[in-house]
Length: 328
Image 1: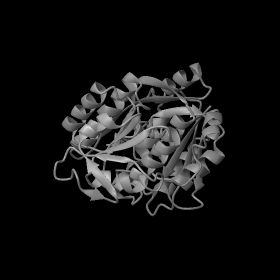
Image 2: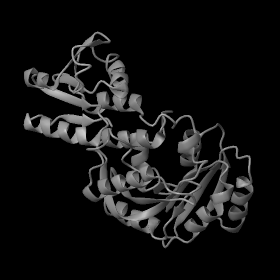
Image 3: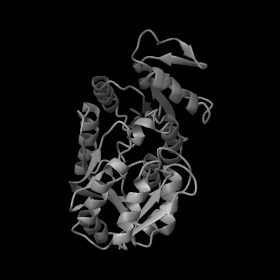
């Protein structure tokens, strides 16, 4: 059986379409664990009406506040061998559960199936959302989730499935770090969980003005720098190498401050001639030629411009540097 974990907060305008899309799944051996997160609208009444007519639907009240406690509570009550997530304002395509279940069943031990997504909206859909969905889907096509992990969250929160056993082993719903889906992606990488790509769109992500990612303060600073630096030092940092930070803009400075909490010394370079030679936080900013004099380099790139990223990648690889990570 598949347990679907779904936090619900003031989702009444979308909840009927959401639950109907679950009821219409081609794979029917599921349970829905819906956690009402103190909704002030009619969400609870809608949930109760569905639960009264289908004994696979179970409704609980969030004992705390927010998505993370709601997910923990849902996971606690889940009875299924397999686990997936759902957002109360989205829609599943009819084959979603079947496609994910088929993939994860082929190799259930220490693995996670990841599928593709698409956005939709009653308003004009922003180009950023379209671009993000395309990027996610390309990662799944090429199975590059871990290689691109420091750019953005590479595992869409609502398009994965794993076993309850695996999720317990990695502590998927433990801790309090937001964004919780990004934290889980890092945990999967840290524990070397195999990603099984499902190369089809299975989920429709709804964009609307009240979406949590637009309004919840835990998601408003979408750089998530502290989370990235924390997991970099857990997963990829190598003490025997010389750490180099490339980029001295706003994001680069924020990363530098976090690195200094972990390291006494590191190298800092920038393509911006106005910053080269300046001392920031006791570190002298150098130009990219410094790369040639640094042995055993490990590079964090904090440059957002895509054209510049491409040039930086070419420069690094021309120098034979393969241990680099784009943080934007």
